[in-house]
Image (cartoon, rainbow, N blue to C red; front, side):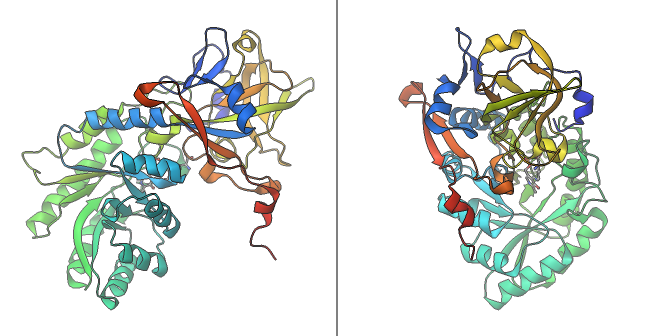
Length: 443
Ligand code: LLP
């Protein structure tokens, strides 16, 4: 999980196996494979640094989730921010999954991928007038409203253009989701949502305002959550609001429970997808809420462990105190370690490297001391030219990458099983950027 790297100082992944259920595994002769394809082959064919994603893993995660739904009304709106590659969004669409968007750009992507508007929900504290207008034109399913000022703006734009916005108010339930402070969102001190004591007044206002129809209520309490208690607490708070609103005659038939389910990065044991789905439905029993549609916005739990970042060791460098393996991926490719002290397992392409370890950092070529992908861990003794796969890079990896130091962004590759689950094959779903891409639009 997101954690203080210092706490991980003595840990190593060399004595464990790659993320359980993830796409990485060693072949019988000790070569690292991704869904059965040698990573050496992927690196040869597409170069490094390289993001590789598993369509099979994504399908499995969705199937696990659906196993917990038990016939109840629901809408899965994949959080596009986690990984917005068009080909991934097309996979979601083909699987009947909608989109949770937070910008006009994400709306554009979701629509390009063919996701129908009635499966799109729009969150975020700062929707611009242009973005609201675009979403109204597309006739998206619902706006998740985060403040009175935003509600008034949506109403104004909808009324002026004689359209109707279905809205849901995002409640800040003030529960502690016990995650990294940067990705915790359900506490009073966070900028997100409407304080629960102000929520009823906002629905009254929505009833008064033209162009808005209150159809939902929701919350999102944080990300990389490793337990279900925060969800239960938030659900209980929002349930009483929902009951109160229905008592006052509001036709609220959607409950948006946000996203946030955690994944295994190191040795975490997050709740299963099915258990998570079941828990949320249990909080709203069918007997009491027969017509309620639960909206889920999973991002990381779908895409996180579907992807890895494949990189090559450029040079080794050491001093008395420390060894550094300088790799061709950097903080511009995967910023999570630098930004959140996040932990990503590092697996050498040859399993024989695992037999000898040392204290080392994996660092990139960027001119910053913060440019590390792994810091202060016992790592396999690597050699120049070795390939390493950084695990759990499918969510908040490429999407948070940049061109810092004028580094062209990495290519992305999708691995899909053949017909009837046959031999997997890989294809480029975003080509590696060129130097010309770097200056596109500049004068
Ligand atoms: N819904 C809303 C309203 C959100 O704000 C988020 C994530 C999600 C759904 C999806 O959450 P997920 O299921 O992926 O946890 N860059 C950070 C994560 C930021 C998450 C922001 N909001 C990281 O790399 O850990």
